[in-house]
Every structure is written in structure tokens, then in C-alpha cells.
Picture 1 (cartoon, rainbow, N blue to C red):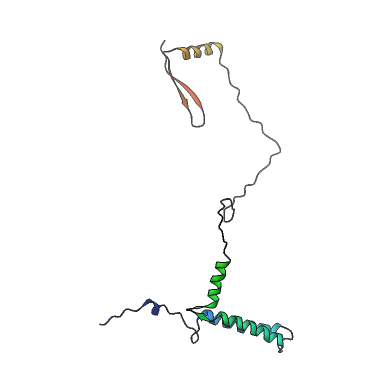
Picture 2 (picture 1 turned 180 degrees about the vertical axis):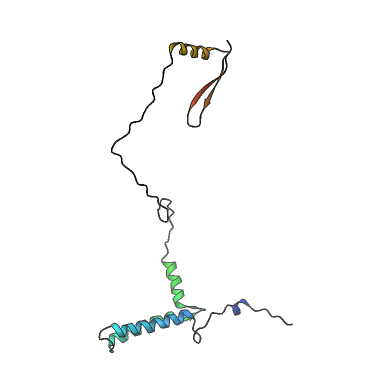
Length: 165
């Protein structure tokens, strides 16, 4: 059996709808037909011939006919679209992380209370005189073993490990 290599250009031929016209070309030509029918039907005098109607139809037909011409395998309308998107692009891109476009915004409703609650402060209970004297004696004792501990939320503790009398 004989095998042949088929080039990729042969397998990717565009679909031809009518004669040698592709779908975009046929659409452009149908646009001329429908727009000229609308102009002839709705412009005054309705359903009658007038010079301005024929000139509008001729201009639209010429524009769509030129856009349907194929150059290097692509119609002029697509070339024009590529050139327009390139020329209308921004020349400089400025990155701004503070732009709120495409962000998920969470609207927080604030509840305003007319009465302000006062914070309740727990008064510190001072040590009695004998307890304060005992604590100072333990701290000043060189044989007392104690350590300082800090908590996660900023708390501070003093731990007495061993006290010899």
C-alpha cells in the first residue's frame, strides 16, 4: 500500500459557501442586501425610487464590497479590524493596584447606636500589707528561683518555682 504525506495547508482549507466566497464574505454581501432593502422601504418616499436612496445604497455596497476582497488569504475587513485594535490600544500600561475594577466588594453596613456603652474596668485589688511584704521578701531572696513568662496576647507572668526557707 502506498502512503503519501499530505501538507497541512491542504487539510486546512476554508469552507466555501457560494462559489469562491467564504462565510464572512457572504455575510458582508448579505449586509448590503438587507441594508439597501431597509433604506428603500423606510426612507421617504417609501417604496419609491429617489436619487439619495440610490446613492446611500451604492456607498454601502462599495464599502462592503471592498471589505469583502481577499488579500493573502484574509479579507480586508479582518485586516482592518486588526489594524484598528492595534492603533487603538493604549500606548503605555500603568499598573495601579488600587484600581477597584473586577474586585469583589463587600459592603459593610454600619449600625450607629445612639447610646455609647462605657467600658467596664475591673479595679485592681491591691495586696494587703502582710502579703506585699511577703512578695517583696521572696523577690529579694537570692535563693528564690523564679522566671518571667510572656503570653501570646501581651500578658506578663512571674512564676516562682522553688522557695527555700
